[in-house]
Length: 223
Image 1 (cartoon, one colour):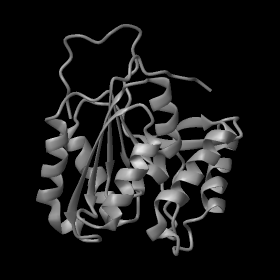
Image 2: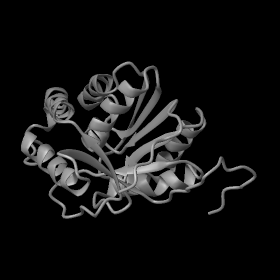
Image 3: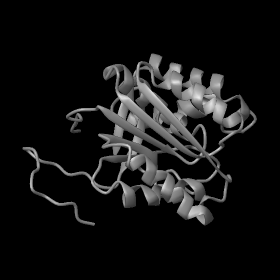
């Protein structure tokens, strides 16, 4: 198994369709990355939940999941479950994030996610961030849409426990969902840990990676 480390991480972009998507899919990664890169710039954009309790939860949660980071959170008010028919507004929201600067890493939903809002956002990301490293996080839910990931981030048990504690603490509006509990989060992390020779892990999907032995110069991005 080959380990690849990012050359640098100065700017991180987080994209979610709903409040809690980012923290569920990549909460452990956020804790690890922000602590490993103090002062990293983090811009988080969520398409739905604006001007509601969910936005309040999201702002408090992401502040907890991004310790020491320079964090900016933007929550829009697109209707939940209707993002596909709001394509223009959704793409404009992503384009506004792109105009804010060059990210070193983007975390967003995966293209095979069965939820229509997640899937729509995942299709927009590569049309806006055309030459960037983007990883898709996974969210376990009642749809049978989990696919085999290609990128793993091992998590120490204290980090996983911290992730689960923060999820349950900050997203009180989701506690009545049958899949929103500690067993769900720990169970998937244990499975992904087995797959990368660790106790626990978060996993991601990469649409495209470029490997090189030296910095790439003079190469224009091509679809």
